[in-house]
Length: 411
Image (cartoon, rainbow, N blue to C red; front, side, top):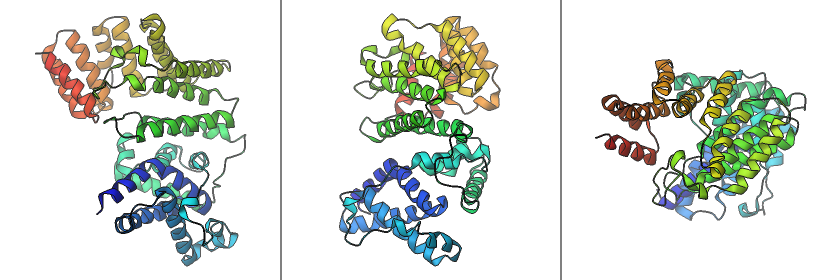
């Protein structure tokens, strides 16, 4: 298999999967069929591009191939006759003289996100369904994140897509009165898109920053669609705060730099100001929510650029409020870290040890923080064990190397 063809296909999958699926699904009204057609297009691309070279616009080539596949399959499938007759798929056809390089198509991901959050679909599947359709995550990845067996998750997602097709759930933005009911799941998926693009492990892959920028763009669309809702503004602020620190998260050599050691002169002050403005606007509605609290936490960290210090006591209070609204394992671990700084490492460790063992068994930040606190308390043997566990769970090579250095320093 030609290496250039493989790399081009991988790049297109990483950068354009969601846009392509959304465009195809909105017009075919069948998520599963759109996924199948795009998968066939990728397989065809690997062979064709190896023989004929990579086209100037791989994304357009894939779209053309996938929608022709969709039209062919639908015409052969009698169960899709209504859709063909309605003209939905015929509208996807191209004039013969139109070249792939000339194709442009609208970004329909926001429509697909709100479609996946339809009340007729099990609420527990809203975010997993979005992650698969918009990001292309597989059942194993999603099942791991939601602590569900991959086969079980896969079956649930298949049923959810069938529900969309058979119930005729519209691939369009819902009425204004319906938007708030679906908003939480949509915002959660957008944030998942952002966090999936958070790490640039090698410093040479443009994909992570691209995904992060697209997530910010989707959040901005939500603020425009629902200007009276504070949580889209809160999410936008949260991502802008995090994104403002991207240049400081890796050294020039690519080494991981923890927040406490980052060079604040590298933080983007214009982006921080934009985040602060969004957070102020959200707070003016006096409807506190999860993303506003998470943004407020990041705002306090950003204050270090001005004060040179961090208000850890205030962070403890914010984490307490966050836990009341969204008791995630990440919020509990963040609270423990803040308690350790505001009070003592022993009190932070006590907070960590109160967490159910089952919930923290495979949660890497828990073990990294536990190792750090134990080392501060001089409990070297226990810290060594915790570092070993944290290193084993680390997926980012840079973070893994950082933890190995911390572990070696114990000796």
